[in-house]
Amino acid sequence: MNPIINIKNLTKSFFDESSNENTLILDCIDFHIHDGEFVSLIGPSGCGKSTLLNIISGLNDPDNGEISITDIETQNRLGKLSYMQQKDLLLPWKTILDNTILGLEIQNENKDISKNKATKLLETFGLNGYENYYPNQISGGMRQRASFLRTILTDKKILLLDEPFSALDSITRSQMQKWLLKLWKQFTKTILLVTHDIDEAIFLSDRIYVMQNKSSNSMEIVNVDLPRPRNGEIVLDDSFLKIKKEIFPLIES
Amino acid sequence: MRITILKINTQIKTAFVQWFPALILIFLLLVIWEITCRIAEVPKWLLPVPTDIMIELYQHWNLLLRHSFVTLYEILIGFSFSIITGILIGGFIVYSKTLEKTLYPIIISSQTIPIIAIAPILLVWFGYGLLPKILVVGLIAFFPIAVNTIDGLKSIDEDIVKMMKTLGANKYQIFKKIQIPNSLPYIFTGLRIGMAASVIGAVISEWVGSSEGLGYLMIRSKPQFLTERVFAAIFLLSIIGFLLFLLVNYCEKKVVYWKTSSE
Image 1: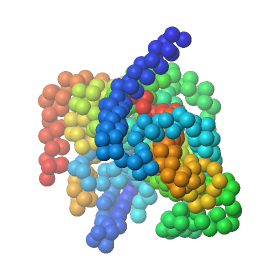
Image 2: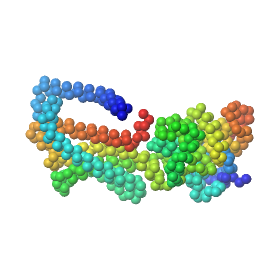
Image 3: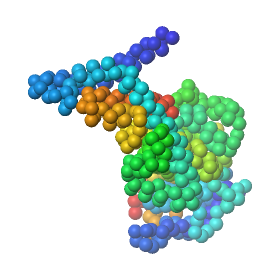
Image 4: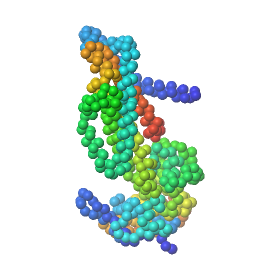
């Protein structure tokens, strides 16, 4: 099977104004993800994982290297992949319902049809009855789910998630992780998750790319062969801890 | 209907509770003013007591009201003029790089000219009528409105721009859906500053040359030693300023509804 995203020899550097020289962020990165796969990208902060996500989404272009995405022209990939950031980024002047249809609005789709689509999914996203609230009237977990709904509604095959749960408290976070797994199954998406939380990465993923410090150009791949569906207790399982022990030294070193 | 009345009642009550301490203080200061002036026998032409001013307001109410309306009219026309030009020019400057390079430096450097100082020139050009007053008010209120509009349109969260781009938005959509609503609270800050400045602008342009308005009344009453009338005019000016401030605040609550919806 061919991967849905395939990256070869990708290099990216940024010009650093304070030292007046180019800093190499990503050096000869190889990366791939299959259709329907859940892959996590984990590493210490500053290792370039968000940069890689920005490049895949099309917000930035690489200096060198190849990106190919199934059914999408590499040059015009911006806007063709769903991308969700750490902050919910809901617009304070729009109601929850109007926020969730923002992506459809940008694509100039009929407003009533869009609202119908969103309304049907409110229950799945735990937002039933809150459609006419404003973002500052609901909790952080709900805001993040609303942001998720906005991302899902644009109906793209690939979801790029940049630490979407890191701003939430730990109880809400673990609820959101289980909920994300359900969602992933229901909508059959390909998900690439950037995180710095080892437990989160193991709990959710099929495969984990571990990025080390920027001096090193290698990414270790860890396969997570835990059975699905997974429940919360799996984090105490020996097989889970075994994978955790495998990843831990890679990040700490 | 009953609910609305109840709601308005509570609003008045909260407003009363909110303003009560300030009102008490003002009242006390007026009493001290009255008593000390009476004990020290300060002459009325030097410093009238509050009751003198109240009597003046009562006896010459029609005269004072007529001149108040002239000033209010100048402020409203000039201020509206500055709102329209300030927001439009601010918007153009942010949207077009060329305009930013040509117009923005001129607007900024024009602020080194004290607008009030050009009032006599406007008098020479446009006479004693309404036009020079509207121009002074308009010019003086234009700057804070334009600058705040520019600030508001520019200060958007980079992550929101990223989010919009990944949703496939173009430059125009980002401007319309993000930058414009985002600028509204900033514009209202500009309006509040511009409002206060426009009252000053109206009075000073009346001082320079006019035949009506509260500023004119002050200039005319002073040599006649009608100091209580000058004070009455100042009082009415502050009432005008206060009412306009409430108007701007009311509009802000309606337009920037999301800033208060958490209550």
